[in-house]
Image (cartoon, rainbow, N blue to C red; front, side, top):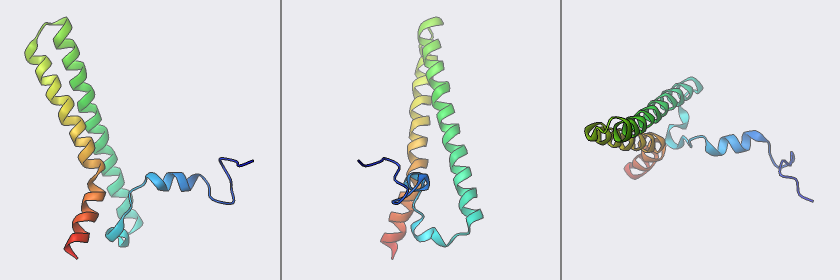
Length: 104
């Protein structure tokens, strides 16, 4: 019988570290700097999700309740902008590592 949480092979930090960014060439940064970067990125991602949610609400209200096509189109733009921001911010660590690796 194999247990999913086998303590001989790892613990919960193994799972958490799997989703944390790999710092690559920026691994020499101090712990405080890494935490600050992670906090800024998390706030930016939450802000982008908020923009996408605001856009979805604006599209829904504009398309149904108010019959305002301009508001609905603005909502679509906000959804796309918010989700694009989430994607870009989420992949910044990978992009920086690739660019740094190509420069060496």
